[in-house]
Length: 189
Image (cartoon, rainbow, N blue to C red; front, side, top):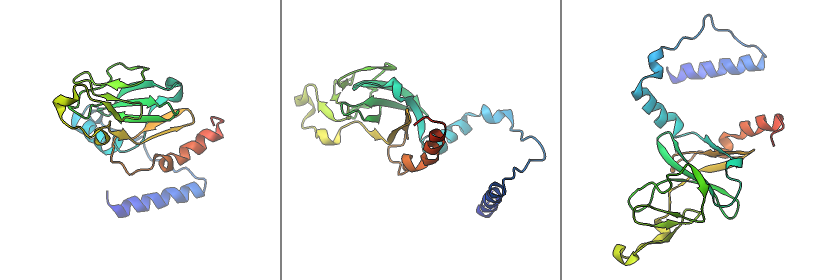
C-alpha cells in the first residue's frame, strides 16, 4: 500500500470520527488461517512490532517490595523486571554482561542482588556490576561499563510497560498518553 493511500485512508477515518459516523465494510474481513501459523511471519511481527512497542509485562502488585523481581520471555528476549530499593521499577535484558548467561531462571522472587550462575558476577537492583568473583582471573574489569542492559520501562496505573529494544528512542510515556486518559476515565488512577 502506498503512502498516499495510507494518508487518504487516515483522512477518511478522521472525517468519519468527526462526523460521528461508523462506516461499515461491505463484508466480513477474512484472514487466511495460514497467517496465524507462518513462523516467518511471526518472526517478522516480533521484530517489527513487539520489540519496538511498549509491552505490558507485569502488574505493579507482582512487585510490591524492594528486591521483588519477575523473569519473563518477551518476544524472544529474556527480561528481568525488578523493584529497586528506591521503589522504582527497572527492566533489564536478563543476560550477564560477561558471557551472556541468563542471570535469573526462576519466574519470580525477591533478592538483594543477582548473581550469574556461570562465573558469579553480581549485579545490584539497579543493574550495576557490583562484584566479580576471582577478579584477578579476569584482569581489570570496568564495572561501570559491564552492568546489565537496561530497557525502557514505565510504571503507570498499576501496570509495568517495557520496550524490549534497549536502543529504542520511543517515549513510552508519550506513546501511552491516550491509555492513561482511558484508564483515568474508568477510575483506575
